[in-house]
Length: 455
Image (cartoon, rainbow, N blue to C red; front, top):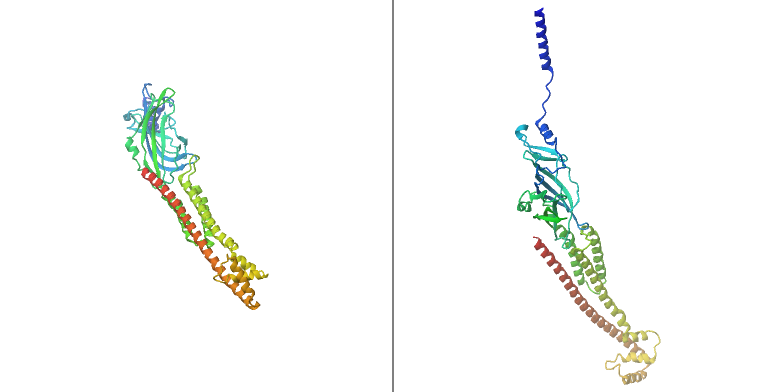
C-alpha cells in the first residue's frame, strides 16, 4: 500500500543519514604539508632559481669565529670552529602566506632545493662538523642556510717569534663554477661589525682574537671574473704558559751555572757541579721537545735560544776544565823542575858523596851564591877540615833547612800560579757573562718588539 511504501522510504532515508554520520570525515591536509608539496612539486634543484637567466643571484655571507682549536706548524694548518651563514633569494620559492594559514617561514631539506656552490679555497678537511639537513625559507623567497662548521684550513704560519707570535689566516669564499655574472657575493653585515665581533669567541684559551677584516674583489681566471670574499683571522698567542713552563726554568739553570763560578777553583766540586747542570738542562730540553712548534723551513727563535743556552753551558764547562788543567799542571811540572827537589831526591837516595854533601851544606850559608864556583871550592875545603861527626850534623841541618826552603819555594810558586789561574778564570768569567747578557738582551728586545707590534 502507499502508506507502507512511504514508511519504507522514510526508514531508508533515516538509516542512510545515520550511516553517513557514522563514517569518519577524511582529514584535511595541513597547510605546511600543502605548501611543501606545492613548492617542490615542479622544483628542479639543479637549476639556478631565477626566472630571467641574465639575473644575478647574490649570496650574502656572514662569519662568526667561535674558537681556535689547533695550530699545527708542521703541516701549516689551523683548525677553527666557525658559525657560517648564507642568505640568497630563490625566485621559485615564493608564496602568499594568506593562502596557507598565514605560514610565513618553513624549513625544507637542503637536498631538495638549489644550494650555491660557495666554497672555502683554503679548505683542507671538514673536521667534525655536525650535519644540518635543513634550511629556512620565507614567503619572499629568502633562503637562510645557517650551520656550525669545524674546518681545517691551510695557512702560512710564522712560528719564528714563538711564543710571542701572531698569525694571519684567511678564509676565502668564492663560487667554484659560477662567474660573477651568475653568482655574486656580498657581506650580510657591515665589514666593521664582522671585524669587531668577538662576543661568541672563546677568549679563555691559548689564542686571543684581534679582528676579522674582510675584503671583496674579483679574480680573473680563464677569461672569466669570479667574485670572492676573504676573511682574515688575526689571532695572537698568549705567551704566559710558555714563559712560565719553558723560559723561566731555562733562565734559572743559566743563573745557577753563572753562580757556580764562585766555587773555589782548586776544589774538585766545580766540574762535577757544572756537569750536573748540563745533564739537568739536557733532560729539561728533551722533556719540552713536544711543546715546541716544529717547522720544516725556519727554526723558531725559542729553539735557537735553547740551543745557544746549551752551547753556553758546554762552553762554561770547557772553560772550567781548561783552567783546572792549568792549575794542576803547576803541581806536577814545577815540582819536577825545582833544583831543590832534585838535590833533595839526590841526597835521599843513599849514595852520599863528598861533593853532594858539600854542595848541600853550602846552601845553608846565607852569604853563599850558588852560581859562584869559587865559593863552592872554599866551602868544600872548609868542610874537609871538620871532624866526621860535625860533618854529618852539618849535613843533616843543611838538609832540614833545604827541605823547609824547598817547601816555602814550592808554596810560593803554587800561590803565584793559583793567583794567575784565578785571574784567568775571572777574565773568562766576565767574557762569558758579557756574551750571555748580550744574547739575552738581544732576545728580549726582539720578543718585546714583536709583543709591542702584536698589541
